Image (cartoon, rainbow, N blue to C red; front, side, top):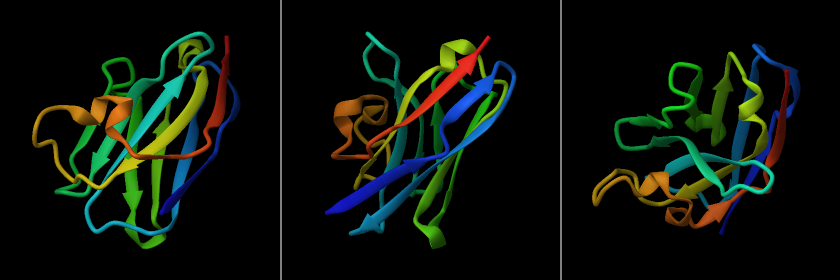
Length: 129
């Protein structure tokens, strides 16, 4: 069983930056996909970004492309989401999820929250205008 722990959320003004971390404890996988999702009050959880162990491929939602960067430090079992030029609409609880699949075979499953089998507890990001 793998446990994911997110950190790095907080309150920031529009235009500011935050870096979220997602650290895996317990069982780790030789191949995996790590996804970041967010959920605003009253809305469904939405895809933000994903990184795959196979070749390090990264994927982003159109709304964050060019502003957010997902990366990993395999030595620390930690993945990061660097968020720049933050906007009020980026506000929400950010969750990281992991799945043992390390590639996109079969289609963009990584964009769906039900594609992941383990989740962290979430970290709040609030962007003020």
